[in-house]
Length: 410
Image (cartoon, rainbow, N blue to C red):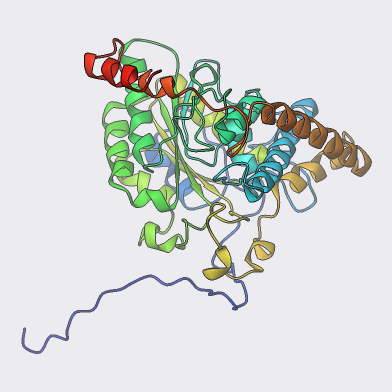
């Protein structure tokens, strides 16, 4: 061993730094419609190639092609377009509200709208999502009131969570949206546990877990795969690969696996990659995976290849770690524009109607914001009651909390 060279540690580096020319030549994009759609009950071993390709439906002409196409009517597609447009308008208003000091914090979904909006339409009432902070589209597409979302962001007197959560960390059992955790990764193993409980009770409801590419480096991600594969839990495990963690490129978390979906192969879990900016492809893959879970065929791991256009949050400056023009160079385009162009190709939409819809949606969002602000914002108006901090922890309040509440005069 005396002649052995000294050891050195390999640290992955992003291909492009701020100031460099963006380069996505390493993202291999298959032709739309070229990836086969296997039977729902296909053996996981036969699906191995799907972890390394990208399922796409919409081609460059705005046409829906291939075996994953044809599941949605024009009316359903139009509804999906409006959901994404609503989420984008909602984001813009709340981002501005944060800059105005009306809330302390916000996180946008720009570029990722198709992932959560399309997935939500594949679920049934009673199914449960265990989301991260960038799946508000699950609520928008599930008809959760925008006013309630804004009340939660403002932490005002009408906040449905009574000020107990950070802004944008929504929770609604009735809408299949489990409480968001700021400790990223925990929701993945919780989704598997919820799905296992549903199976133990012989229920028909399934779960969906959500995680970002950066958080796949957390131990909870791997624990979730162990339990999901061992007990064949009725769960869809979603990885939103938007290329960046808060300020770290995806290569740090991905390691040498090639793709995030490939990590499921070692557990015997069917693993697919899908164009996360293609509403039709996301919905088709979601339907396929949800049906597998519903038919008691076990878990599916899905990687959504997309791009975070905006900052990680209102406290982040992406210009410090990525090229300013990088989002413009992203080869899979804008999910809203792609679905808009598809509907125009079908003859079901037009530029004029789109402009009108944008104005109508913005009016709706502004009206909701005005209604929410009647109840207060971060620095003005009504606040949740101090009494609320003592409620909702124990079924029966213990004596020491009763004493503390009395001492606080609430």
